[in-house]
Amino acid sequence: MIFTYKIADVVFSADIRYKNTYNVMKDYLAPKGAGPEFSFKITDEDIEQEKSLSPYVLPDYAYESTAVYRKYIYVALEKYDAFFFHCSSIAVNGHGIMFTAKSGTGKSTHRNLWLKSFGEKVTVINDDKPIIRRVDGKFYIYGTPWQGKENLGTNIRVPAKALCFLSRSEKNYIGPINTVSVISKALNQTVRPKDPKLMSNLLDLLDGFLKQVDTYDLGVNMDEDAAVTAYNGIFGEKQ
Image (cartoon, rainbow, N blue to C red):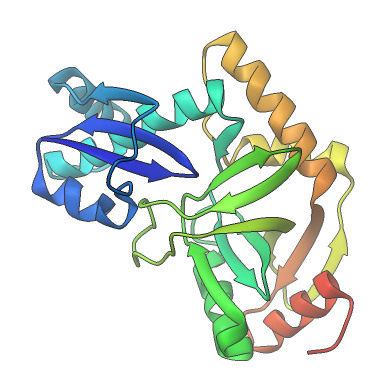
């Protein structure tokens, strides 16, 4: 089954075999008449590769979905100034905010605190694998079909404003981080290609991204006040 998708404003076709993969990606089908800029087919070898990389035993359709993502992101990195970033991302009054940390730290919990504290001001862009893309010199956060365990996300594009490196703390605090010190942390939250040219592209994008957005060290205790502390630190104002 060949379907045409539009993800991060890039149109492509994928030849897939499982209905579940279609269901995961159906909100990102391209408009009728949109011609793909590139195409690929998911093979048995692609699915076997994903199995070898996964620490879990999953249905084949789950591996197929991951294979689509992997093939797409390498082309996007090579040709469209786009990369994947592992984080929970939200839009707040039209500004894109990202929270990243090691798994189990509480990214999704913190995201829920923003929803509770600020209600309709907040839209979840993607809770696991958004795409970051540079367009005309500016960086944007895009929703994708790969939305994490809770399947939360929206097919939107939002200008990137802030990236918060989240950690647990008894007291809530937020403060800026120097760009030089965050490159290695940021690299740990994306796919690092083996191909030298793609790796060079990624480093260039990350350098530009981290210089353009505000970067923060965010310590939270998961009380509701944690979201208010983060909001005030990022926007420099009271709720």
